[in-house]
Image 1 (cartoon, rainbow, N blue to C red):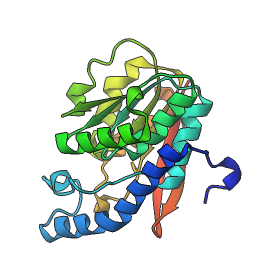
Image 2 (cartoon, rainbow, N blue to C red; image 1 turned 45 degrees about the horizontal axis):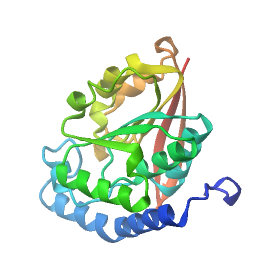
Image 3 (spheres, rainbow, N blue to C red; image 1 turned 135 degrees about the horizontal axis):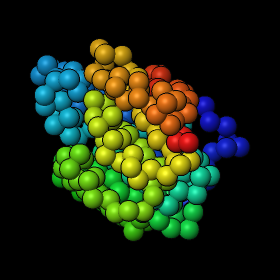
Length: 231
């Protein structure tokens, strides 16, 4: 668990939204998984899995969310790209850091318009929407035009099999000292994570990164995360 000494203190407005979204996750996500599994959609290898999970919140763990804030805040990040907002939990943590850093912008993506609208509403409720642009559709297309400002931090938190491809689109703009953070890239194949190409690339020092892997816990499960810095 994250020590209270290192736990970010968010405004009541932000914390209220975070708490609500985690409560909704506990209430709603198990049912979404059960319905998807009943239709033979057990993981992202099954076509239609994410569409079947459209009502699931699928957030980062609270510990990892706090760590996202700390990494973005301590690095002074002002230009962040996120692959996969879902209902906006991870985006809220990152946007809170950008706000506390004095301003900046997050470009985030969501495949489904309905989820993007929910994420936008949550960001508005948290008072953080001014710091976020949500792009809808295929991220490999929507992230091609992100401007020329150096990227401070990249978060990969969507389809695992696309982590490598998304990084290749963004890497030319990632500054030295910039962070690449991925959620659950190393889940076993049974759970549908296929980020082997990404992990092989990011863990090879010849490609210009130094990598550390950690785990957080929530709802009785352990979740892996990978954090890399470009040098």
